[in-house]
Amino acid sequence: MTTQLTSGPRSGAGPDKQVALAQPRGFCAGVRRAIGIVERALDLHGAPVYVRKEIVHNHYVVSELEKRGARFVDSEDEVPEGALCVFSAHGVSPAVRARADERRLEVIDATCPLVAKVHQEALRFARDGRVILLVGHAGHEEVEGVRGEAPERTLVVETTEDVRRLDLADDTPVAYLTQTTLSFDETARVVEALRHRFHDIVGPHDDDICYASQNRQNAVKELAGRTDLVLVVGSRNSSNSLRMVEVAREHGAAAHLVPDVTELDERWLEGASRVGVSSGASAPEILVGELVDRLASLGYADVEVQEGAVEDVVFSIPGRLADPVTGRTPRTPLADEVG
Image: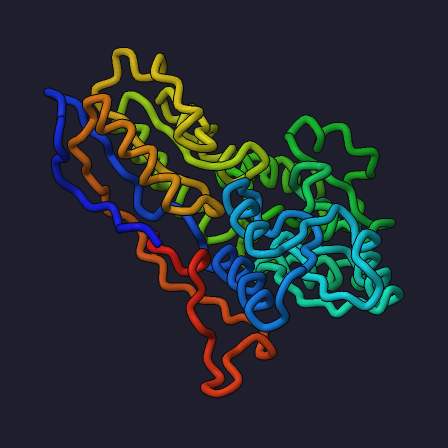
C-alpha cells in the first residue's frame, strides 16, 4: 500500500518548478473490482488461478498478480479442463463463454459492470433488427467482446472517415454504441457524423463512455491549460491512458505516456517549469508516487493536488468471493491501495 500524495513542497524544490497532480487519477471502480476478484480467488482457491487475457491493461498489476499465482492466458483453450478461470474486466463474447462451458471451466466473471451494460444494449438493438455501429478500436478486447453479441449485425467504426465509407443506405435502421474508454470529444464527433448521415438512428439511454474515463480526461484538460508538460502514467496497451495523452496534446500541452519511472525521458522536462501528472484508470498509485519522487529529485518538488470530481462509485464482487463469516468483501492489498 502506498502513501497518499498531498500538496506541499518536498525537500530539494527548485525555484519556479512545480508538479500539478491531477484529481481524480488512477484506479476506477471497475478496475478495483476486477483486481480484487483475482486476489480473492487466490485467497480462497490458492494458486494457480487462470485469467483470460490481462485482468486490466497494466503491466505492474499483471506482474504483481503473477507473483501471487495468477496465470494469464490468451485463450480459454489454454486453461486446463475443469479449472478456475477469471474473465477480464474488458468482457468476452458469447462464443468465449460457450467454449468455457464446453471445457467445464469454473468461471468467475470480472467484466466491468459498465462494459456489461454495453453488451446488454447490443443485444437489445440486435433484437430490434438494427445494424449496430460500434464506435471503438478494432481488435481491442472490449470491442471484440461487444461485437461478439451480434457479429453479423455489427460494424466497427473509429473515425468520421469510417462513417463516410460505410456501405449502408442512409435510411438503414442503425444504432450506435461506444467503447467505454474512448476520448469523449473525439467520440462526440464520430457520433455527430453518424447522426448526420443516418435518418433512423438510436443510441444508448446513457453515454457509454465510463464516468472514470470522462473524469480523468476532464482533469487532464485542466492540467494542459495550467502546465507546460503533462505526463500520464499508464501502460502502452491501456486505451484510456493513451486517450488521456491525446486529450492533453489537443488542449495545447506537450504530453507523454510514462509506463513507469524508468521510462521518464528527462529531455521532456527541458524548458518546463510546471509539470502535470495523472494516471490512467488501470494504473496503480505506487507508479505515480515513484514518478513524483523522481521529479522531486530533479527539482520539481513543490506538489500541488488540483481539485476535481469526487468518485464514490463502488462495484461489488461476486457473492461467492465474499467473506464466508461476515458476508462482506474483505480488503485486498493491490485493489485497495490508496489512490
